[in-house]
Length: 162
Image (cartoon, rainbow, N blue to C red; front, side, top):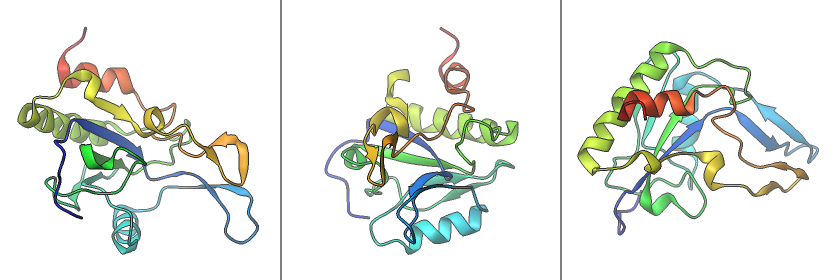
C-alpha cells in the first residue's frame, strides 16, 4: 500500500464471504468463507485490494498491510480507515465464534486506544457501501459482515455498555 496522507479515523469490519457476480455467466453468486491462509493469499495477490488485519474463527490474528499504509478495502474510504477482515460467510447465518469475537474486541481496544477513536468510528462495510451489484441491481454489492455479526455487543465490549 501507499503511505497514508489522511489520519485513520475509521475501522471497517468485513467478512470474507459475500455476494459477487459470477464471471462465467454474469449471475449473482455467494462466495463462502475459505481458510485464513487462502483468504490472505487471495487478497495479497490482488493488485488493488488489501486489508490490515484478518481474524480466523479460532481467534488467530494475521497482519497484512501495515496500519500506516493505505489498504484498498472500501470504496471511497480506504484512505482514512483500517480494515479488519473476519473469516465468515457473511450471510447472516454463519455464526461468529467467541474466540474470533474476543480477538476482534482485543484488536479494536488496541486500535481505539492508540488512535483515540470513538464508538461511531467502528463501522461495518455495509454501512459505507450501499451500491447495487452490477449483475443484479436489486441486490446490494456489500452486505458484510452480515446480520449474524453482533455489532452492538462487540462495541459494548470495546467501549463499555451505553
